[in-house]
Length: 165
Image (cartoon, rainbow, N blue to C red; front, side, top):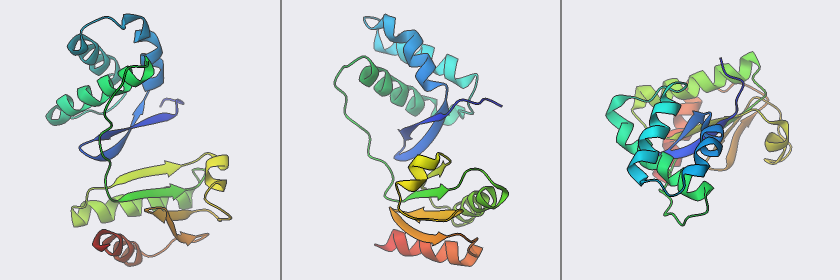
């Protein structure tokens, strides 16, 4: 498994993590004058090698990769809106943190809910949320639990409550 940190991009309004994006952007930055389609195709090939990209959404990934490339080389771009539901699991990667992430993903899958999900492992970034014990669950910027594993039912209730707002 790669030790690279993921970069996050918007795909169909949901934040998706991509490993190796920064390295590919640096590698391809010298191709600034090349056609957009060629850059997007090349990025897809390079990034698909280390990431799961379903064929049904390759076009969306290519558009997102091209958007990131343009930002990287200083060209103006229009950002894609991200999901109204953003979930962060705060924790360094301990078993409880990983279990919380699995529970959140299970609830989203069972309820067929689209959301941007991020597992924040960096201690400085975790600290930016305020004084929290891990694992912690943050939904749309609000800390819902800290220092414990909530029940799956409680997670489901918090997610549904956040959608209704």
